[in-house]
Length: 108
Figure 1 (cartoon, rainbow, N blue to C red):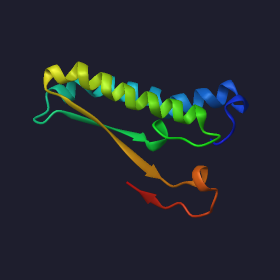
Figure 2: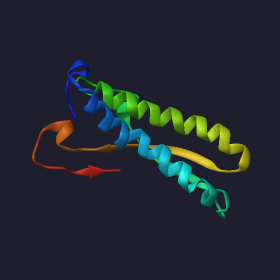
Figure 3: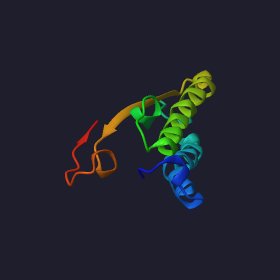
């Protein structure tokens, strides 16, 4: 959702929060018992370069992706004591949100 930060309604922000952070927290919490019992326990979260470097009109999205990266670091510190690796991949996914074109190539 590309728009200036002050143009986001509460509903916009909540939708972005649910898709980018709340879902991650719920899945992580739900899978924790299974991860603990894994032979090679690991978590890989999907972040975004927007969590580190961002352009205009994506402030809310960028803040949430930054939170994903920070969540990953905090979880790695917490779960690392149990031998669980937690990493975050910074992906670039070209979509209409990024370039406004009709082509949606994906690169991981």
